[in-house]
Every structure is written in C-alpha cells, then in structure tokens.
Amino acid sequence: MNKERLGQVFTPLNIVKKMVNLITFNKPNLVLEPSSGTGNFYFELIKKYDNVIGVEIDQNIAHKGALVKSYFETKFKADVIIGNPPYVEFKNIYQKPQSNILVHKPNLFHFFLQKALDDLNDNGELIWIVSSSIFTNSSAKELNKKIFHDFSITYWEQMPENIWQNAAVPTAIVKIVKQKNHPQKLDYFLSNGKIIFGNRVVSITDVVIKVGGASGFKNNLSSGPIDLVDSQTERTKQTIKITYEPKKWIRPVPKAPKNFKYMIFVNTKTRNEHPFYMLENLKQNEFIHYDAAVLAIYTFSNINETKDLMDKLNNFDWEKAGIKKDGRFHFSQSILHAMLC
Image (cartoon, rainbow, N blue to C red; front, side, top):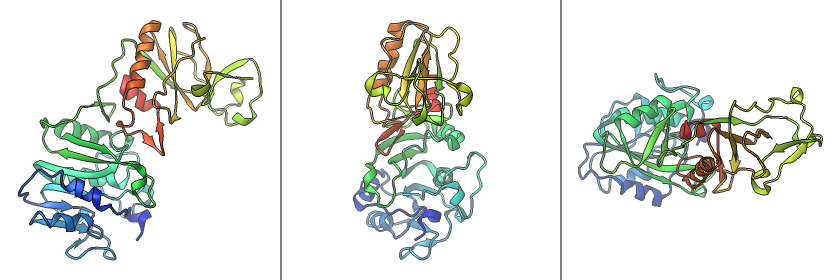
C-alpha cells in the first residue's frame, strides 16, 4: 500500500457500523463508497442494501466486486455516499483533480468532498470520516460557503486520535444532507469562509487580534528591563524580563492599536481547556510585549466587558470547532478573527 500517495487508512469495524447506522434511507437508489479499499464499508453495506458500489483506484487492494478506477472518472448520482476518503497532501497527489473553488494546495480529501457533494441526489446523505479541521481549512473557503448555504450538517462527532494505525490526523464523523434547512441541522455559523460549530461568541467590544513577535533566538534572549509574555505565562501568570532589540528579531512585536483598553492573551498551542487569560497587574491602555507563541486580543471597552468576553471564550467548546491536534488546541489569528470579527 502506498499511504503517502493514496492515503489508505483502514477503518475499524465498530466505526463502520456506527456510520452505516446513520443512513436513514430504507431503499436508497444507490449507496456509493468512493474509496472502497479492502471493503470494510462495502461488505457491511451489502448486508442491508441492494445497490451498493465501491470504487477503488488501487487494484492491489481492491475487494471482490469493487469498481477499479479513479472516483474522479465516475459519473454517479447517489442517495448515500459513505466512507473514509483518502488524506493526501497536495504535493503527494499523483494525478491532481480539477477544481474551480479549492485553493492554496488543498488536500486530496477536499477534492473528494467537492465531487461527493456534487454527486448527491437532493436530500441525499454524505456520511464520512474527515479531518477535524476540514471546515476551518483555508483551502476550502468557497466549498464551505456552498455547504453552509445549500446543505445541512446534521451529525458531527470527534474521534479519538488513537483509533488509527500509523495515522495521527485528528478526525471526525460528519453527516451532510443535501437539504438547506434539515430539521436535524446542527448549530454552526459561517465566518471568513470557515464553518465553526456552536454559537458565535458575541462581543460587546470591538477587538483587534495580533500574533506576537518572533525573536528566533529565545534561548539566548538577554535579561533586561522589558516584560515579555511567553508561552509559560499562561501557567505562571508571570512575565520574563528581556532586553528588547527589535532589529534583531525575525518579526518584531506588533504595535498596539490606537485607543485600545485591555489585552486578552492565549497561547497558539495549549492543552488548557480554559486558555484565555489577562494579567491582573496590567492597567487600562497599558501595553506589554509578547512573543510568537502568544496571540493578543485587544479590546476597546471597559474591564467588565473585556472580562465577560474572556469568560465567553473560555466557555466555548473549542474541541468541537476542530482545532485540537495531538492533545493541544491550535489557535490562530484567522480562527479568532472568524469567531469574533
């Protein structure tokens, strides 16, 4: 098997059965699996349904009864499309499919998703294992808009990272129905081309979000009079003292926006379930330097409204938003901007 080029990761039977049970059609016109592999889904599906097609490009592993060809060479219309599409980085895709809406070197599963959505009949169901970051990835902004406006996401379940052999990509089970306002539609919103599950955090105050400066030589920072917020400050609530020489930094600490009132901090990578914090000793309009491991949210309102925003951010289910990987939350300027701006 060529996992790097074909993205072959095989699905445990208990996950297969769970996903098959999400199908609501009694007699679908066609149940299609676009990357059928050795047939884990296929052989479970044919126990319940008559018209099942499993497509598999790799003849070396294709199961009995598989249609051996590229999914992108098929022209099916199906009531149900189910499976675990391949996860392959753009640089490793052997024959790159065409897309007029995917950008920035999309993963192969994005191409599969776009075609599968096009191949669904009205009210059809797509039930897939996907990367948990699929709806926040910058490559799929236009595809996310299409999903948000023309489809309904009715099921989303994060999967434990340890269920896959030799694959560390955080995954989820998703069910997408080709119906705009399905009665079982989950709560989610679209912002800056990203779909985020849950209700948007509403801030009374305007905000500006900036990532910290990159010194490139943190272990050799000279001690000095300048306070610096770093990744340890989240835990200790203490700054480190440095000599700040911006011309020597890869990226200087950003300047504070005019007329800001307070700063809320969050590490770009953190295991903390409630990672947003403020420094109690910082006064109104007081700026403090911070490094590239930290994001700052600048607010323009009073202390109570700023703390209220911080509490809302800490109470949001960020794991459901799909930004958890290797046991850590991965925050970015674009994620926070989508949430708050």
